[in-house]
Image (cartoon, rainbow, N blue to C red; front, side):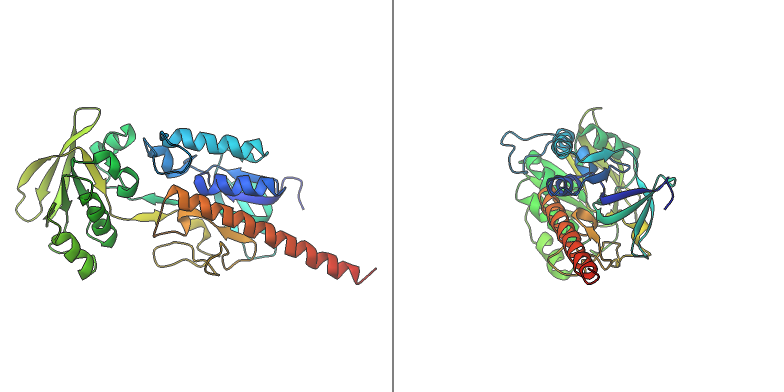
Length: 327
């Protein structure tokens, strides 16, 4: 083995709630975890202004503050937290190989993938502006809907997730306007019927977002355009929700791990964090396309660390038994 290749017992890829929780458990199990933060240190939660649904924070906490506290807790148990991101892997042999920033090579006994998923946005400059300001743009109704209680909001999307989030918002908000790009839903009939039959949900078909409007700090409205008539109108709102899907950050694993049609890593054994490659485990939104919450991500981070520890223990036990035959 070259002197330039580092040997790591437990490598954690990603630094959201899943990655940091995995690090806390792995460190306490004396697995000496090394965690690479990735391109977005702290994960999606760093774009969330207020977190009020994570246990242990009775007064709420901002997403960035919460991630800093999780990092400090992981480092307290001597997790080696590093800047940089994993750009290539090779899980074809007994040794799990990864490369950091296309340069540094690491050989790992176990790998915990916590790379998460990225919400898809429309890409409008005004949308991104208010997203970064935390001023009214969100991709998670369950996370942020509470802040718009008794307000009027817009949600963009036409699939089952969009319908679910619109229905969720309808229980909190005064009015929910759905913007559907085509003349029909992509959602299942039962979900489409649910929103259509909800009194305070208005559905605008053949309608797209032209501009998110605001006062420079918060969202105050949205300008939409009918893609059949080109007619534009402005809708006064305080919240702009985007529900057009998520993309799991799993592209570098596709040659080695089993992924579903949308790129989420498939758990080889349901109810565990195991993948189809021995010694490689997954936690958080890289495998979860249903719940996508900080608390569920943290829970699977715990599972991944425990599964990794048991994998190493079983491997060590097998080695001890095999070598004892020669004594």
